[in-house]
Amino acid sequence: MSDAIDITAPVPGLVATVSVQAGAKVEEGDVLIVLHSMKMEIPIPAEGPGTVAEVLVEEGQEIDTGAVIARLTAL
Image (cartoon, rainbow, N blue to C red; front, side):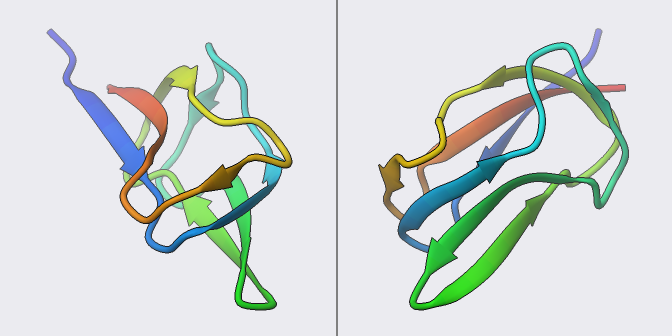
């Protein structure tokens, strides 16, 4: 059985880009979401290979540190 991996925001910010959708296969390091925070773009990568189970944010949404932004199913 596969384990779920929660991808969380390392900083508060604005979701600038959502690069994946549910069902997408990703490899470690693939950029899932880009945040804008403190005038910087912060790419949020996959922490390992898997399938995107769900994306919990949308472009333009403000999020807090630690917010779960996506959930992966590990391979």
